[in-house]
Image (cartoon, rainbow, N blue to C red; front, side, top):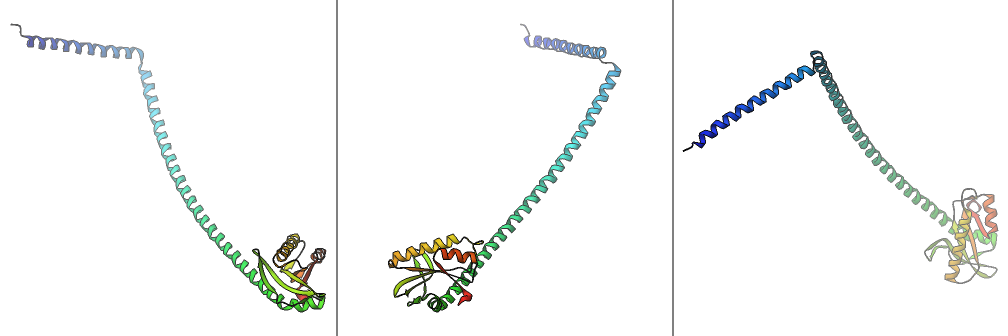
Length: 234
């Protein structure tokens, strides 16, 4: 009977020896080819070039580290600038709110002054209009609201026996160079129409009371049939 296991082992040893010999032969041929191709001087130059490349790589890595550190400092600076901008925006918001509050306070102060001026006019206008224009107010002057519009001075009066309306506005100063008088005149005319629509078609006297009016403003008011009364006149 044939011992197949023994035959297999013998074949494997022969094949292994053959493979080892072939590998050793191949390595020997590689070394021989290298010896024929690369001289000692070329090998030395190659080694030197490899060293230079290694040094260059080292410097490159060092430069990369420097750039990374610079980027880190830049990012830190950007964060500082962003924080400074945030604080600046916060300060701007505070200033804007303060300015808004100041404007509100000034607006309230302006309204207070205007109302005080109108209250003075309520007391002084009747005698002034009667003495200078023969207009007799028989009903107390008041503030009135008609169709959502506030009329600073409103009253009923008589002139030459006929009943008329008094429609007035208060302006602290009238200056044709600093204020759009046409808007003031148009506003008075609009309020005159509202009064007539509400209370009937009667003649109306339009009055502007002010602390001071320039000559140009007085001239333009006269052209628009508006009586201007300056506070120093009463």
